[in-house]
Image 1 (cartoon, each protein chain N blue to C red):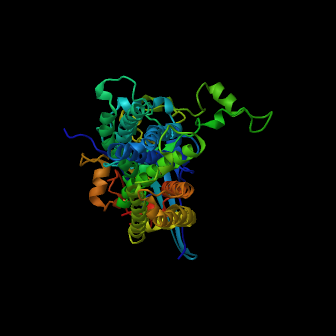
Image 2: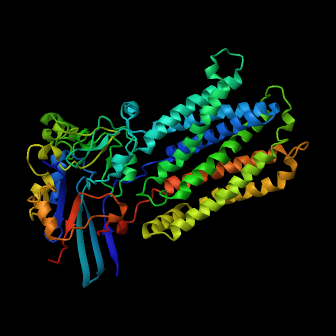
Length: 233
Length: 319
């Protein structure tokens, strides 16, 4: 049986730019507010009334030829057998070479201890609301919306001094579920699956539509593909 | 038509002045070591005080650079992971290994020169340390260019001239630092007995190498400029961004005062480097200082300027 080769296809014709993927990712992966594992590029072109609008959701491309993996001096950034590009926070020395090597800007560095707002003792409205610290203490978690499932395959909250990035929700995939951004998409614009399985949703979509990738000239061979375009069927 | 692109990225420099310092000091150390070894091996014994200074600079400078890099690491306590995990595709991993070996060998070389009467096994002689150290020195020098050149996401770095620039910079700054420190020590601290007032006699080949390397660096920087200026769009945009931010300091301090002035001074002083004649030490020191400042400026502009954000029009390219 062929090895799995996970990939994601984003149908730009279906995407409505609601950013539900971004929010779902943050909640699922305990991502700090200022980081964007799931992100988007917004492009407006032209002068009213002749304008166009483009919304390109972005995330780690889990490249076949991942420069972050090639350049990592400690193998903290690595390719899993199923094609995912993953990160081992325990091996990371925080040199940030992966950030420099990645042309997509999807790797983030914890310069400070993350989730500072849940260590803050000052209440948002003094005398009326909890402070972030009280909130975290009462729920007995690093942050109120902490998802312990994230910690099954990666650090639940990545510590200060290391990088972090999208993992294709490998903890969910490991139990047969789709990544959080795929599940949350109200327009079914995201298709996730094994490219080596011709019956998988992304394999079928790629067979039917011409796939495009971001910055193809970089030679990274991304595993996140884009099909179609908003306004063009 | 007006186009506006929005993408929220993590702000701030990824590699700051500490990395510039590491690359600069690493270059100085490597160049000083090669200078010391060649002088020790092929020049007359009267240059031994200068050899000792250069040999001492080598491990101290590279180790100081590594110290700056260590300071820059986000997770310093994990640095042992570099040894536990073999990562042969990573230039930085190779750099850590060869720099470690180089510091050890150059430190041994300096120790044997400074304390020749200390009894050590023959295998730890200055000759062995020096001969073994040379390939490591060259490798470290190339590594400092290659570390940036392999990052194809940064067009300013990913070019052949980047590696050549690194090699030329270590040649120039290593020799300049050795001469400068030697002259300062001679002026303010009594060095060991020796014909210290004739330091430059017979150093004409060194002066020639410095002038030639500085001139070659000018040509290399021009080639780098042409390579980017007439390269693909991302390269042109990266060059434009770097020049708009750091073009003035690169032109004034890196090229003008850092290369052109020392070249002119060197050519004017060249006849006075011959046997039996002595160039003015003050002028030589100033030329060396300018070369060092120029070398640092070029590294600074390349490392910091090379990290200016990639235009979103490039990042949003779907094809």
